[in-house]
Length: 337
Image (cartoon, rainbow, N blue to C red):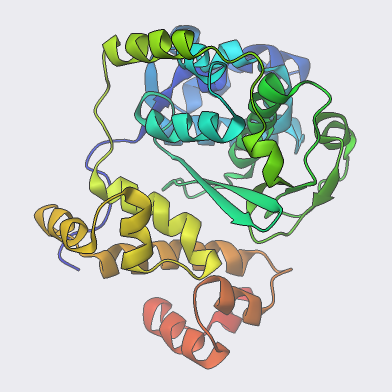
């Protein structure tokens, strides 16, 4: 590999992602100040929603809070406390979109002003649609609390446009079911699928495209002008963009350079040229993400080896085993012993 396919600077997200953190921590019987300090944050840093803070610090904070409290639903507690206003200035634009699909596309468009680590992909399948979310991170610990929060916040967005009574068909989590499902039932009010292949929501396609009765085209134009006038943090690099895409598409068997380029709105030659200028190839990034996901999937003992192989894009177990052994100097089965 010519150059490790990582961002050259820390991936950032708006401090608004930690809205209500201190009150949730106190509700769990914790003093939030020492926890914040352990991950390099302070109350002052997270008090201003527009501050940009390291993404890995927020993921570490959620993980640390969960372990310190013994609560495995910290992420959903954070999501339940959120309102659309906590999205910051972009909330003005989101509520004026003609549909939920438009709002999701707006989040992707302005990801650089929200959360660079969030991958979002809509997969239409007949009358239903899957909204896949992925937190792309180098954090070595457990990121499930942050993933749960992202899924919970997605519900806030849906209900802001479709009404508080709206329910998806099902909500999916890649981790095992927690002991207590009360907050899941209260927040989602639908079928829950744990140990799934993805984090996200399944809903009727018609719901994504249902007209937003409160949308105003003139207000949407004004809100977009306002967003464009705001100071812009550094936009994500092509490496970050490709990593996010591969994270989302690999478990679906679609992480080809053609599919990734199409999703990013460029042709293959342009994408390869951009990656070459960054000193990395598409295969470098694909292999790196595959390694990261392999370790995550192997740690989930509920996943059979065949399922792990399939999620990583291998049609048969023997090919996966050869790749894994070459990468980690041991067979995948030995990683679980």
